[in-house]
Length: 70
Image (tube, rainbow, N blue to C red; front, top):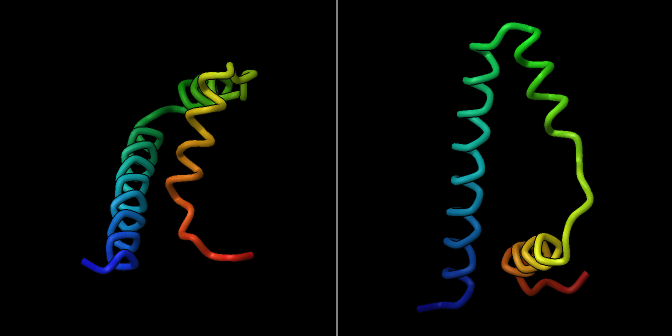
């Protein structure tokens, strides 16, 4: 199988998964009142990442790399 096709399929699956998650978040947010939404919003403030979290994030970014020169 062509490596580019595999990369494109992987990227599509990642995009689709994120889209479904965002759709679910938006649906849930639409069902909240303002106070509930603000509580969730406040809980999403960034926190310092541990080394494990940082490594996981870097791995995810590397997985998305399509081998293009910038």
